[in-house]
Length: 385
Image (cartoon, rainbow, N blue to C red; front, side):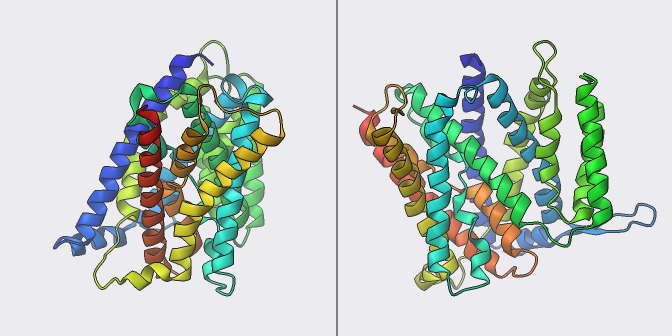
């Protein structure tokens, strides 16, 4: 994969981080201002859809979280496929270090969270919240240092975040499936087979894929599998061609919309938290503390610790022109969970325990803020030399 597409990807993700930050900040300000009732009414807004005998009532938040976020996961799937076929994940030696580091960055935070919430059966359902890394925010912080950041360090963070997203997708597919419907599950298999047939027949027009992708989304919704998985499954069958590359076309068309609209809108609707009546002791709640320590302590221990072990005891090496301190700084930035952590927290608690969402937001915002600030300070001290 040529360097220019990588640079374009990094710049777009970094710029997206600014929009995410502004959206989250706006949500928090509104939720703690005289406009709080307006913001909270937006979160509770519902829309009644009439289509033949199907007459569902859909909330604005669920429409964003289950509908628009499917586009985010479609984009993630496209990026994964592109990197495996054309980019930084083509050669095994290029993926071992960030892959192992990503595994550590998921295992250690989950263990910390589960250790703190071991006696809390409800809280344990949120074990996956601190395993995520928000690539847009992390690259946004890293971009503050401009050309001082080695390209190898940026690629390490990008590749690690790709594996991190893959891990989150697997968690969603396995642990957020409820009451499987056999008929719609079979329908989903038939639709997937149809998408595969399009690829096999070398169809390069995108409309047939997108139409079947919408049917797959609806089928998974009725099946009991979280419908955002439809985006990833569809991406696996979008063709990669040297000429008129459909995958690259779709990715280019989606990236700006997802980065500058879908993700900021998700952050705006899900990041609001009221500090009214909140006490310092709320940070010590097992769920909140588990998320904070998982993101801030678990992520850096997992990412840096596993990477250190790989470099010391195998043939892996530090990214080009990168020092141990710089690698540690990036390991801290991996603790910025934000959008993915909020998404996993919503999946864990929104349906049956919505009161826990305030704990999730407080934990995610605090853990991500601590990780981002300390990571930026470490990198600033090292990169200015």
